[in-house]
Length: 326
Image 1 (cartoon, rainbow, N blue to C red):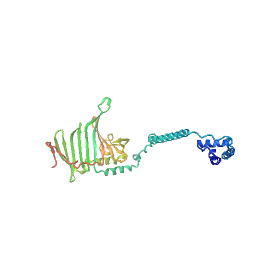
Image 2 (tube, rainbow, N blue to C red):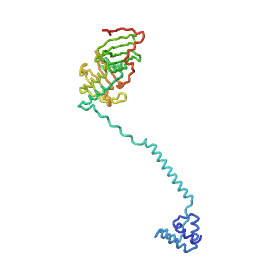
Image 3 (spheres, rainbow, N blue to C red):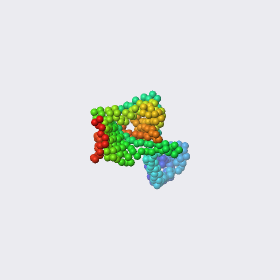
Image 4 (cartoon, rainbow, N blue to C red):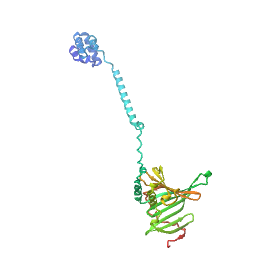
């Protein structure tokens, strides 16, 4: 390697940027050429003035660069580090939903029933007035005081009923021990009511003429009457859940409904959101026991079959009463 070529490579040599073979060739030339050796010392001094490396460059040629195997090792480490970081990123992205703090619970519902202005009674009446058809479940609970030490025995009746109503029209399907016991229809025609009862245990039926539509067994009218006196309820029973929905309960003495003594009660539970009844209870005091009618599982927007209020008399059933002509 001659002087002109060495001079072109002095800066790269001084900066350690030559390959292994070129660096050896330049070093060999500097060992034999004082002019180039002095020049490389000056180049090194200008690159790092006052440094020990610059001083050493005046007398010592540049050492050979590290072998390619070292560079490959550093590259492998960088690649492995990048792969590890990518794996950590993927793991965080996948498991973040599991370790993220849960969302705060929703705020509690507005407790409108605590408003002593009782403006919400009007909301309940409005919700009931919009009902077109309704279905519900009925059951009787008997509470007897003949138990030990005066403790009441509570007995659920084996009779339950599925009920439907649409305006003055009404149907009750009575079930006992899982078998049909009785079906009742009250049907309006020309403003007059006719009651038909089919009894499956005796294979009989009866037809009775009732009064006007105002005498109908109307669950909406009943619930509206109870809502009207909620400001006179003697006990707020707190909240409970029926059918997966929050409800608030009120206890009303039957005397305030004009139906019984002060110590016998009706209770109504209202859906916190819709303000429609989710359960209605009514007590009846007997000589040695108390009977409670429970009405629940309400569907206040029921889609009823078209023949829900059409009496069906099974073949072979005997008519035992017929006062339609009275």
